[in-house]
Length: 259
Figure (tube, rainbow, N blue to C red):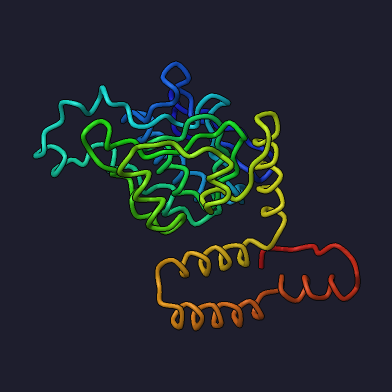
């Protein structure tokens, strides 16, 4: 495992909990943190002992955005050639294993974008989401304008990107940005329980389920349905499909073998 300065990683059976760890600056995303996150996500994705990853911060902030002190003097030429933090922002969206964001407090700018890269978000009731880049003279750069629009629709995405306002947890759940909201005391446990439930299922089937849902955002409906149908049929080549259906008929828990 990569030596970590800005992250903490815990194992809960086959669930990996990755915690952003720059509490003094509300987990602002610096180059070191993003490099560690990219390396850690790659290692966990390749680890056969890990089935699901949960990404979190602390009760005050998931991540309050990019570390502006690092990027304020960057030139256009540098950003074109190097990309800055954007070089490391695809490690979550490219992860083949399910990734759950457990968000409390601020998830702003790059922090909101980081949460949206995950497969779904479980939020504490004190969570605040926003894309406030307009207030500092720039625009979202980690995919925020694209993912936010797909999740909450054009009107709300325009509202947030053009005014920089924050969306609270209740509005985020109503709008489809967040899947569930719980208390600050319980949100992380709820996310870990959801991860444990996913980890208990057949890993090949979980992978297919993740792929078909992602397809819905990236393909026309007819093509997506065709792909879903083919993937559905392919599950009948798995031992886990036979075991799962037999267990249902026999009224007993399924014992999946991930084959």
